[in-house]
Length: 224
Figure (cartoon, rainbow, N blue to C red):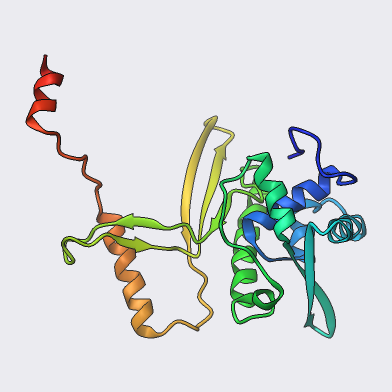
C-alpha cells in the first residue's frame, strides 16, 4: 500500500507498509512483520534494513525482549511516524500511542498475542485462496449497545480485536464477508470480569438498535 503522495524521504514501499501495520497494531515483533509482509522471503534481512531505516528517520522505535535465548525486537511508531500515517488518510485514526514504557509493560504479551491471532487468519487465508490482509483486523474497537437488564444505560463492549475475512468459494464463484470478534485469553482476567464480558457479548448479540422517534410534525411533513 504505497503512499498516494510522496512518502517521507528515503522510505520505500515495504517500509511504508510496515508503518501502516505498526500504526494499526501498535506493537509488532520482527517475526510477525516478516510473516505478515514478506512471507515469500526465507529470511527477514531486507525487512530488518527497512525497519532500521524507519528508526534512523525517527519514524519508528524498538525494544528488545529475550525469547528462547535470543533477543527479538518489538517495533512501534513514534509520534512522527504516526502523524505521517495519519497524513496519508488510508487508515482510521487511532488516538493510542505506544511508548518504551508501554512496550516493556504488562500488556506487551497480550498485544503480541492478539497480533499472532490475526496472523493465524492471514496465513490461513493465503493457504486457501481467501482474503485477509495484515490490515483486516483492528484491536480494541468499542461497540455500544443497550441491555434490557440495565435500562437507561449506554453500555460498551470492547473486543480484543475485530477481524474481517472474505471466504471465497471457487466452485460456487461466491465471496462471503465474515466478521469475527477475537478474544485472547491469557488467564489474566478474573472469573468475575470474564463472566461480565461473556454477558456483554450475549447482550450485544441480541441488541437491535432502534431508530430515533420522529416528532408528530416531522411525521406529517413526511406524509405530505
